[in-house]
Image 1 (cartoon, rainbow, N blue to C red):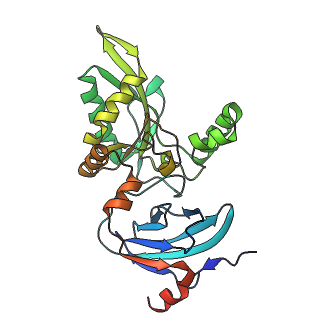
Image 2: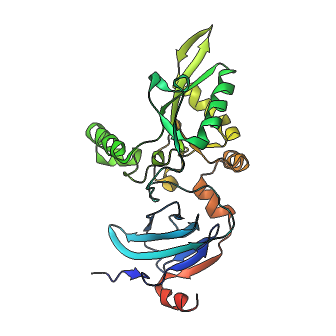
Image 3: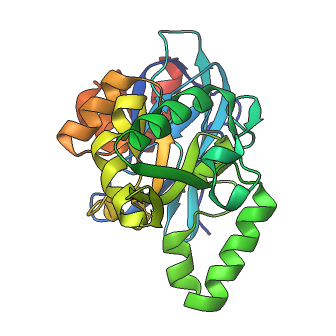
Length: 281
């Protein structure tokens, strides 16, 4: 049985807006990092952790299926935040903001779709400006409850098998849809005054334009090794910061890559000598 690295009685302290690198001295092992509260701490899969907002959070580290570390963190007030990284490695326990119902003119098949309130205005603006180019955008998914995520996983498991289902669907509690900041889109074109269903046209349009409204394609092509999720041209995520969204678009990078390559690490922590760090913290 492995002795789990833990600092349960003395959390690592860092300031909001900082990135800290948790390092293990074993370059030949592929570790998996999981944040149990992404609103406070989110993690990259190379061990970098991003302090998002004040509070306490636990980062678990796995070697295969075996948990080898529980790192407790306390985030103190600091500089203001970058968009929070949500994905299958960063758990979400509640929506990011008050949820509101989308107008039926902007949803597929007149469904009842809720999103975070701060997303609605930008989404409506994007839809209106797309329609001016004869592209009709409709949302098919927005906020999703944990129970709905479980049902979706079961549906794809039955039709495609477990491995394919888990590439397509994040585990319940780890789906970006739980935040209310994500939308799945489809739609079509206006041709000679008539609506013609054509989701690919919508995917192409949002790939080129959604950043202008503070959105990003969350799971872009050829990035599955980073995001852990297959390419989803229909899935957009609201990050509010249009200048950052433009960088992600122009550089063809994920939010993970932005944190990893564009934001400096405040300091590194050798987890094999965690007690030394804590003594000097």
